[in-house]
Length: 187
Ligand SMILES: [Zn+2]
Ligand SMILES: [Zn+2]
Image (cartoon, rainbow, N blue to C red; front, side):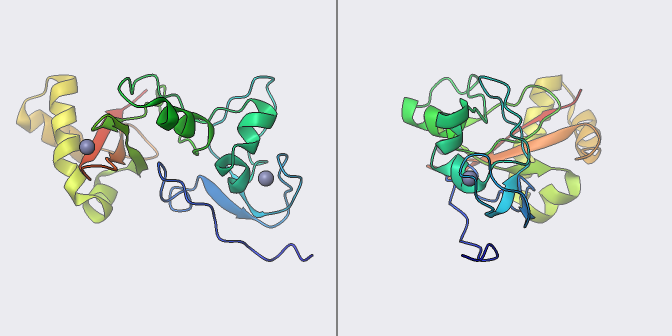
């Protein structure tokens, strides 16, 4: 068995582009602690476990997708506490079988149409304009409401959105109505 044969990555309905966000990175050397195999990719995002296993960069995408990491290590990847109107199956899939992402504050999972939304990525102004132009009005609305800004103040805040510096926008999309959802945080 050669280890260089990369299988197609599993599909995560609540996290469609884990390569694009950097949640999975190519790693030809590190065996996965879930399946004890070198799968070619490791997970770099946040994970909490019942017994404080050190899983960062040691879990493969397949062991997240099929629930092996959750079962074997008590691993949780996301907190859906703020999505209070989603079905239990969605909550279970997002928490235990979907990669997570890193925010400045406690990560939130957004919902829409009584369903979990899909996480698309962190965005700065330039990325919003390039990748998610339809999310821009949602981000601006969030900024106005969250910070009680005037339209001018909101514009200024919006143009300062940065990924590696604060503040950052987190972009989601509803799997049912396709509308973008977003929130913004900073330290
Ligand atoms: Zn694995
Ligand atoms: Zn919706």
